[in-house]
Length: 559
Image 1 (tube, one colour):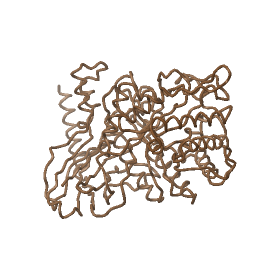
Image 2 (cartoon, helix red, strand yellow):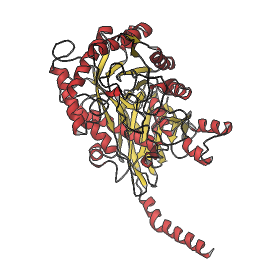
Image 3 (cartoon, helix red, strand yellow):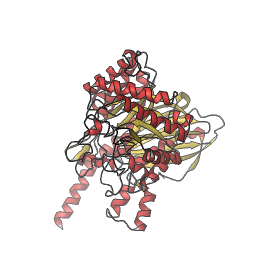
Image 4 (cartoon, helix red, strand yellow):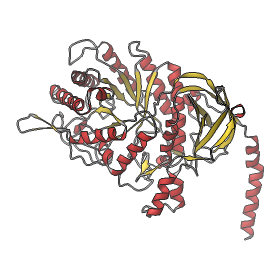
């Protein structure tokens, strides 16, 4: 007992001598929002999602999640999946999916079957979302190396027969042509014409077992087939890995040069149609001294280099750019059980990282003068996996994870982006150089519509360690004269709000929750208010609050 009392005395002295001065020295972060200083429309660039496994789209929790994503934003959510043309029985597995859209009869004649693709696309459209159509992968009957075809990840080779070029480009083109004709017939020319049609995925690595020149040929044949069926289709690529890496940068550059001036393999003309440019951007978390350290700098370097490459081509500098995968790291199906750095996916670090990444990517878009269209989060859900197992997902067994709530916050942001300056922001050039390793990034994004102002505020740091809360003062100016009183709502993601992971741990981490526990988890996974809504005079809008490390707030003001 004496030793225990001694421990408490020493701990108290430590708190007084060490922690108290640190807290006392903490400076208030001032965020100034000028509602009258517009910066152009705030595009819903975050309303894009995707996954390797297309067949989970119509699984019970998959359908539910798509409906939630569609309800989270007034903009149509766009969903990109791999394996739309992969051969197989339609049963999903980690990093696998299939539709069996193409087979051949005994005489080698094509047999088309659109039932599974229809089930996928119909589900999106019925929920208010729409397809972002990634054309891939190679059907077994068309692959130059058809066997082995299905991989058994994580065992053995991942990039098997589905990753190879076609043995007959004309048959491949006709498959694509028939797919687009079918979509036009089923959904209408205008609707299918509003989708993005992207050729393949990450052809600079194992996803494409051909050369860069063979990918260019595939692109030419694919785009020609799409446009013959749907002249208004928006076509693009090449969906490379991050251009922060030399090989990916070289691939992206050679592809753009081909589209600008190369000989078109399908038409014989010069160049190839290109309506948007896509590439990927990924971070690199790791475990350092017993805690997770995120790698935001890596993701931002991919974006920075990609924007620089696109803007260096005058012909394409103004084209929409879509980061058709943009994530803290590269393997959604790698759980925290095997990769302990991925534990960040369960709690508040994931949404805080996402907010900081989106804010920084928007700044890089301004820096380069590029036309950023989409930032696609490569995360969906896996059926029949343990609760909170650390996959990169938005929900676990139908329970929404904290990260989903940052997209609900973003969905409330509409209208024009307005000026928001923070004394606690980390300069984007510093982030590119070294990430967020010293002071935290306490920054904001703001938007104004006719009768509302929204301010997203985050407190992010690469190192997931305990730290003092940030004292935040949001000063708002420039509201219209008609806004003499405003209703203030304060939404929060932190350890105790909008956080089903905390609720699950408080229950004892059940893998078989009771119906009552499950209902509580579902409720805890929704976006929650920090406090009751309140009215405030518009001339006294200095909103003061504390924001924990790895937490996000959304202030919504209505008048």
